[in-house]
Image 1 (tube, rainbow, N blue to C red):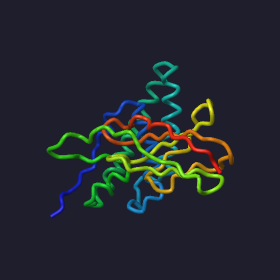
Image 2: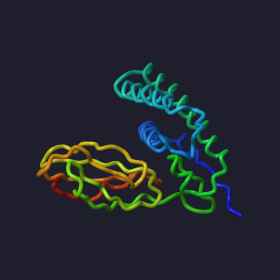
Image 3: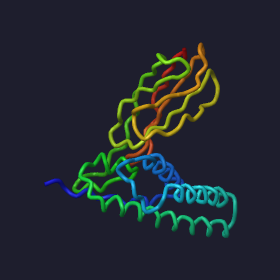
Length: 205
């Protein structure tokens, strides 16, 4: 008999910056995820709550007690919404850890230590399609999503996006003859983020 997989509520203990990162991760993992079609909190509502939380977080970092109080109120609303979503996922009775983890939430691991920190991602680049670079990622244990960035020459790192799995990761609209540097960070696990990968470079065709 397969064991009951419990959804972890550890997000309730996150600091504000960790909670912000967790909310962003959930947006990516739950969007178009066929395992969770009837979320009790619509993604549009969660996105609006995230925007309010981020605005009040920024204000509290430079403001006074009133701004801190507003942030704390929004934090309580965020935690309440996350508890509803976690309860819904728990109610589905999923029996595969990977299915539960695909939601962005962690799981309770009985009799074991929490998931270990994420390892550094490994990947290769593919320029076989003109005007884009394919990012061929190796899956990282306990990772729930992958953050991809690129740079050109000595330029700043530019976000490509956060991807919920290793499939279909592409850097679009590349310029033929230009060399791109790419790095990847896994998201999830006990430390939320892995170290950045080594930088891989390739010329676009």
